[in-house]
Image (cartoon, rainbow, N blue to C red; front, side):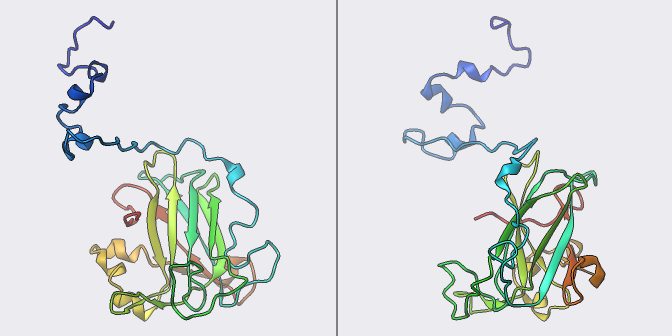
Amino acid sequence: MGDEPNKGGIPHPSVFVEKRRLELIKGYVVHESRTPSKQVRVVTPSQTVGPFYPIALINPGEDDLACKVPGGARALGTPIVVSGQVFDEAGKPVRGALVEVWQANKWGKYEHPVDQTPEPLDPNFKGYGRMLTDAEGRYRFRSIKPGAYPNPGYDNWMRPPHIHYSIFGAGVMQRLITQVYFPREALNDIDPILNGVEDLDARASLIARELPAQHAGFDAETLAFGFDIVLRGSGETPFFVDP
């Protein structure tokens, strides 16, 4: 079969085995965007993370951001539960998607060395979590409602309370990053990041839905919110660049 002519007129990549010929391939973006004479490393291509993600990488209690040890002391703040489903472009639930979240504590402070704001840290607040969606694409996290905080270096404009999301799923070439916001927050209306999403319906999809208190399945003080994620298609959730 190796001696048969290529009926489509495009040679098999194996013929470009020499470096000088590889540099001349039209459309080979990595080499076209750089000086061919320089020694460069080819960027590793993205590939799908599916069909399965190792469940052993998810430990018990990782769906709870409000305590560092399962069953241990809980963080200060209004307890919340955020739940939802992950869908593909056809509206079908995505099973086994890895959903990771992280957020600030009740004072708007991240437990991160780059966060130099004066607000206190909470010794019981973990601030991040991860879980796999079930057979119906469902996920659920326990946490506390995050506080607003100034964005240093940008005239200290205040960011509204929000939770960061990262999603891996079968057929996804790289992790998808977004943020969920809370309803009836005045800072939502002036936040440059949220309002940078020009499509009003898409922007509205980033505002969590308030759910009945009993939906949380905990106590009456726990606020429940719903946030669904659509990976692709006309109803795709707005995603942001992963820095």
